[in-house]
Image (cartoon, rainbow, N blue to C red):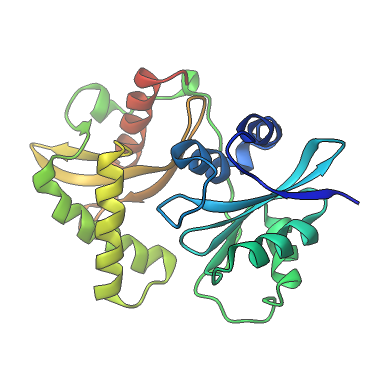
Amino acid sequence: MPTLRTLQPGDEVSLESFLLQHTDTSMFLRSNWRAVGLLDQGARFQGTYIAAYIDETIVAVAAHFWNGMIVIQAPVHLPEVVQAVVAQSGRAISGISGPAAQVEATKSILGFSNRPTQLDEAEILFSLGLRDLQIPEALASARVQCRLPHPEELELLTEWCAAFSVETLGQRDIPSSTTASRLVIEARQSMTMHWVLVEEDTPVAYSAFNASLPDIVQIGGVWTPPALRGKGYAKSVVAGSLLDARSRSHL
């Protein structure tokens, strides 16, 4: 049987060593602890982390974050870390994220398999080495520009973020979605984790990173208003954000 421990400051090296074995499906776990550490005082990105150890080596992790999300990377001993982290955190559960098979198993462990959900889908992840990034002609020719948003554009981006949540995440409460979206946009602005594409100084598309690390980033929240779709704006804003990330990191 494994030894279960609540991770604390000082456990970062062991945690990172384990997560690096599962890089493509551990983005949120890696990004969140690197942003705020391993203490859990309920602040944004903070969470309670439970690890299973065999012979002093981490073999599984589950975290229960400030927003109620359970995030897992547990190829073994999944029931133990999931049950322990829910008991330890004392939080309500808003969702589950991780490798698809582990998420399905976690739903069963927690008795959620037959409960209705707002969103329940397996997302296919695509990876790209940025040396292979192809630059869209519109961006290469500077017909459009990708840049960090200006402060006066944040209200518009809040509206776009809320619309994204309604269209892709099944949000129904527009006022509530707008309030939550404003906090998301403000956080991304403070962390320089989002970009806007402009054509003739007019915003036409948006992209963000929902996880960012020195060696890898994860794209999320790509949005083009419906009336502007089909013009190649989305691929330009994604490419532009990746070029910016490549210039500022080791990607």
